Length: 90
Image 1 (cartoon, one colour):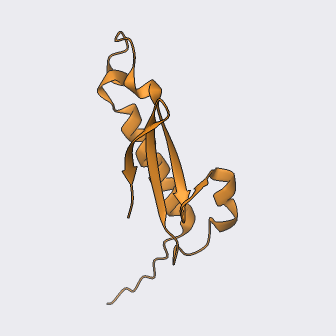
Image 2 (cartoon, rainbow, N blue to C red):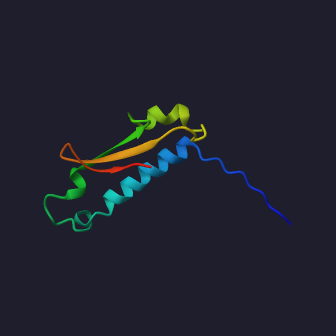
């Protein structure tokens, strides 16, 4: 018996996975685990997701959600106090 599967990675899957991963990372920062500590690092971090180098939101990605993720590049940047502190690129 042989099973064959065809899996299609869509832009919605890529975007949602990237967004959820970043949110989980921020939530797991040590300062978030100790609520009595002041100046919480997790509260001062924000992020932006980029599609082909342009900033996108959930609303912007909606038209592409079911489109195969071919010839498109998603990346992200993390910011603290308006200054970029990290980037996620393919």
